[in-house]
Length: 237
Ligand code: NAD
Image 1 (cartoon, rainbow, N blue to C red):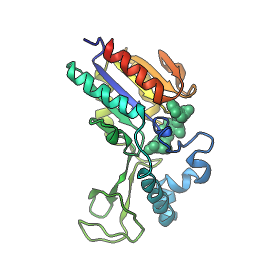
Image 2 (cartoon, rainbow, N blue to C red):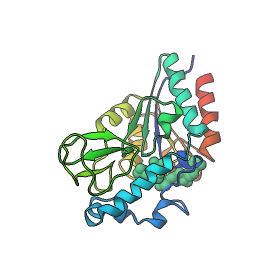
Image 3 (cartoon, rainbow, N blue to C red):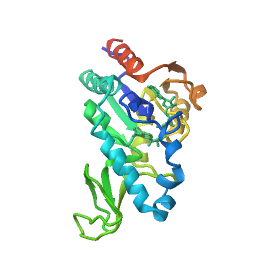
Image 4 (tube, protein in one colour):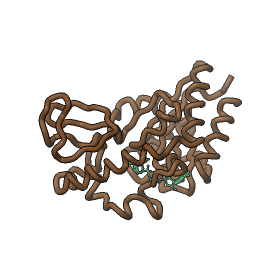
């Protein structure tokens, strides 16, 4: 019987790096080619919706060429293992890719939206699609043209399901952050919330992050290897 049964895991772009998806801030990362103001803000979208759709069409197309890596698969194994032992795991991801789903995880909160989801701002309908969109795309529900935007939380917008996330952090025993630079709030602040509530905290990241000093323990290295090792410790502990 594992000692720790209720775990919250927060993931960032680093967990998908070994699958071949570029992170945002590392050298060679996405934002070197595309300034954040242009592709990840409501203002950028208003100024050039065609560029923004093309950017997210390309990211969506990239999904077809990548697959989950051992870190995604280990988290799915952890979720199942904890449930078998009467426990629970909440997976919060800042990632907009679908690699946690394809890796087998089920209880996933996409706090920054999803590449495969579109949002009609005319009728508020959200729908899944792996296709391409333009500023002239038509909503499949209300038939209005020109109101479909990527269902991505841009800078200056409110992340999704904040109440559920805070409740999960309040109720967990262990908070674990994997592959995130700790630079984007509110996600970067969850470790402080967890610690102030007396939870255990662990960071797994390639290098020390901006928030490393908030964690009880930091493990440095590639997620593909370190996450599997940690999951084995929890499930065999
Ligand atoms: P980030 O690029 O700021 O940080 C990524 C972190 O991962 C870095 O600290 C880096 O050292 C670490 N890292 C890189 N390779 C790693 C590996 N193999 N193993 C472990 N750690 C590794 O990304 P972020 O913290 O997620 O935050 C920025 C924003 O980027 C988020 O809002 C997210 O929505 C968005 N984003 C998402 C994706 C995706 O969906 N896959 C990709 C890029 C950016």
